[in-house]
Image 1: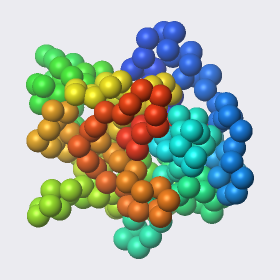
Image 2: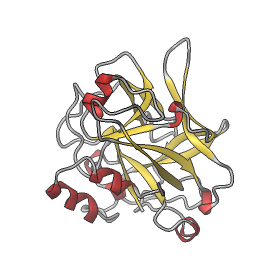
Image 3: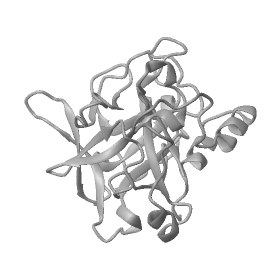
Length: 245
């Protein structure tokens, strides 16, 4: 199946009326943007031209000031930040240097109960909790160039059991696969147009998987895969993710 924009993934997650909100959600903020480098985010023009409909920028619902959180245009952006190469974040969500250009490739859905397994090792509980949720890989495509063939990978320390996100050659493995869902056991539902992004790798937790987490958007710290947690209603969240095409 060809790659799809992430709003198609949300289509499998939300009720019809909620889908309208997702499909019509644009990059413009509902509130004034603060002064400084924090401006409406977008992928580079070259990437949008090279990969129309596939190139996008990904952000988490964190902003400065915090009152601007939950407005996609104000979000801190997923950014390739350092050696390794590390996948981190930046409060400057319009760097336009290729470090914030990504393509989310659609890899099918979590099977429903009773359906045969796909390419990933989902348990019966996974199928009950997340059946029908899209599974994606996140490929870095700076300026629309996908020749690097590198994807965001959850690398778990055997000592600390903490997952950290690096770019590694795309190989279709479970450590490069992510479940997109608004509903995670033990947490509140992610508000539209946001969703939680879970690593397909299993963890011992109520969710059965760890959530992609923007740990520190101010310093560009590395993204981690951590226990999924609740957020007070109306507040932004380091585990709420969305995209701007």
